[in-house]
Image 1 (tube, helix red, strand yellow):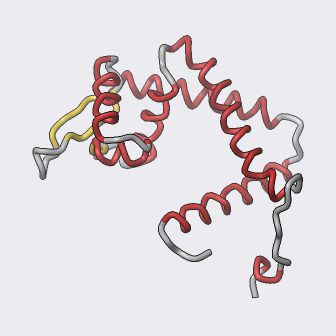
Image 2 (cartoon, one colour):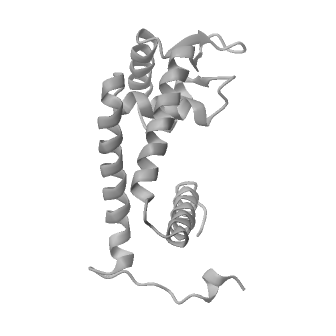
Length: 164
């Protein structure tokens, strides 16, 4: 029997850690994004743009992504994602080309300039993480990583209609 199955069922009540976890995850994410935004501002990259660039690299960079795929991972409509891709293209961060197998589709690719901005984003993210995690016990960081990874997996399963 798994450890999760052996654990007593947790009932979230107002003020309990189980109740607060959603708020804490949201607050930490929002605050980290704001600090990251401030660090990226001198590079002329907005939150929406750096998020789009990051998503492009989480998939097959050599194959690019269709605008529809980009819209889905960004949580945007197709028109909004097309406008975002156009702004990124105008800034020289991405290029859009027709899909080789379906000319009706545009694929979005990171450019060399986009790659340099992405490299800076990675460096800023590492510096931020080092600052945020400094002084925290490794075991606590590893436990937080395990819990957040499990929560992400469970939320994904729920969105796919799978039982938890």
